[in-house]
Image 1 (spheres, rainbow, N blue to C red):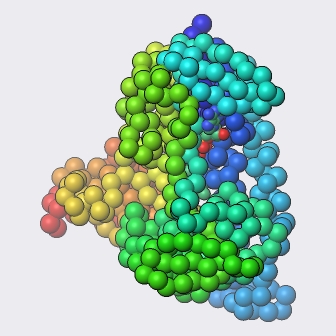
Image 2 (spheres, rainbow, N blue to C red; image 1 turned 120 degrees about the vertical axis):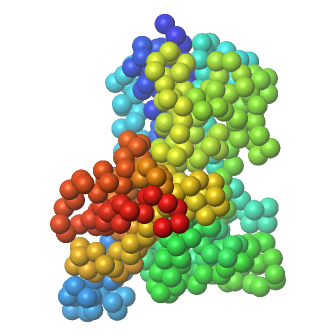
Image 3 (cartoon, protein in one colour; image 1 turned 90 degrees about the vertical axis):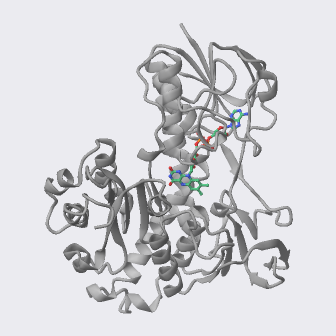
Length: 468
Ligand SMILES: Cc1cc2nc3c(=O)[nH]c(=O)nc-3n(C[C@H](O)[C@H](O)[C@H](O)COP(=O)(O)OP(=O)(O)OC[C@H]3O[C@@H](n4cnc5c(N)ncnc54)[C@H](O)[C@@H]3O)c2cc1C
């Protein structure tokens, strides 16, 4: 029986464990913080639970045109309040339940779970320092490293867990911050800024770039920035935080150009650092890049034979779905099952702002830079009948296809629940469908997906030449 030892029980680790058990291996997972990993304990699950509350408030607050009245007042008047302690208690309960679910799932498959810290002791052995103080030596035929990452902090901005916070610490707040300064306008910063703004907090978003969400579709990012400012958020573009200090009951953020921003709390969202220090990589011959991410190929192999790595510790694409797929691929490969190399062009991802931005495949930037030859259309949702009925004014659908063949290669949806709407585009890309095939599939009338079919129809004659 092949002995598989997995270090880290996040999506990269636990999904791999399930595949390895299915393929008949003897599997042991060593995990330090709780099954489900950061994805369940501190990142995806809690943040999207918080976002669910923010989304509900936004919907009610912006439903004045639908004729809603809240407690005799207009929903636009902003008098909906939120019980933060209750929201956070719900977040924590959900996180615990989800982590327990994952642990039970592994136990059902006879996967051994050790609570503790693992490190490599050469290329075929892991030493587990268990949380009860014991030590266990685990010999392995196959090792998977899936140790994840943790929040990066700035040298002059040390979190104190009360006023200067990482995204892992916000769920301990009992009250809504009066004025939250969010440093960093990438996906995490934008999601939290949007959510806290909806909860009723005065939010200042410090963005070092020209616009928020610099890595996203530029049109989509513009929609979000416009929505943010319309809802009263202050967005400071081209502003880089130099230091964050606690002053009395508040915080002071000093920008690199000397400007000072005052608030009650500061949330740092400036990226992640891989959990790869002190886990014996060098001794085992596992190569890392300049930032400490483990180098892997498309089937998750590291530079050391028999050692694989998956998820945030590889820095390939920091998403739970990608971590899980890397982990599964590693096991399919290691245990001799059929395996497809990781294809990042098939990954769909969402920024959970309101509206959401969902993307898959090649991007507008890829096309504009000439990296890929494709043509596209952009349809504003304002023209969609369902959007009109639901009072949706912002957002759009973009679809890209190959000139000549019309094969769908990318898409962007900016809409409420875009995370759900992107799936047909994702299916079209992975199934190599043409715009005509997408256009011929029925959509419900009225529906937002109607705009995806409409985009495909509009590309019917434009798929012959990039210039048309
Ligand atoms: C705020 C936020 C929101 C996010 N939301 C989403 C989202 O909505 N959708 C999405 O797809 N992605 C989201 N992500 C990204 C996602 O959380 C990560 O990509 C995902 O958690 C990576 O999974 P992983 O298995 O690599 O690592 P993790 O989930 O970090 O799990 C790693 C595990 O390894 C353990 N560990 C570390 N070192 C050791 C050791 N030496 N020994 C034993 N155990 C160890 C840790 O305790 C942890 O349990 C979000 C990220 C952030 C920061």
